[in-house]
Length: 322
Image (cartoon, rainbow, N blue to C red):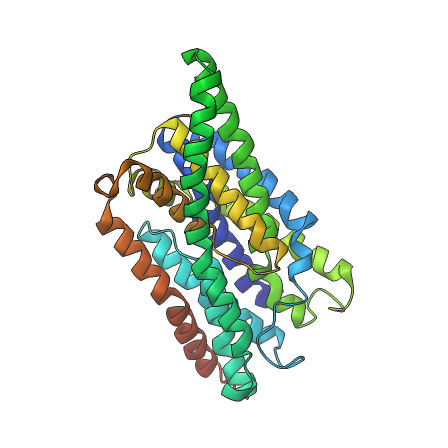
């Protein structure tokens, strides 16, 4: 049970860093209270984890089948969690999925060798990671134009418009939390599932159990340590009004759900940053904080390499090898 702490720690990190981004724009614009936001995130992230999360577990493997042990699972998830914790402390929306894959790739190379690691799958997933924020940005850019035109034509009362924004943020935020749980829970307990910790990996019930445990940790992370990153996303990239915040959350949620259907875990942080950037583009490049964006992009590029390095270092310290 001690070895499972790596996965629990990583699940907590997802909740603290990624899931907070779902309501970051709403909280930053004072449309939704922080306490309400994190409670909704906790509930719907667990629901998404249990309902759709299990279908990502069978494909979450980057080494030869049967070569990853429970101890190795602890090392790769603990390394990813340390990476996430460090960047969360700095207030940066880190990609937990990339940190997790970086950690598991480091262990996969140790267990199966460079030739045995699944580089082809990694390449496909890396392309999805690139497309994720771009797709969210395109969706948000289009949504600003389409939804904005609709509201301007059919909603004329300010009070009604404010009500639509608040209700929409809650609905889309719940959808975003659901998408996060469905897409990201696999990175917390996926290696343990492959190692047989939750039972026979060929049984669907094992994946459900693993997803339920990971979803619970995501909920705890959102409830305990999410405010700092929420403010970075909601205020640090570009100034958002309630309408822009609503569109950003919707675009983020759609992008996350699309990649869930392809069974590829992507970053909630990258989706929301891409969505917020897309909204910013409708107002012009001058409204965007390029320094903040560059800092975030740099953190994304370094994340998998940092996690892989930490995983290999820990493995050597406790003498795990091929």
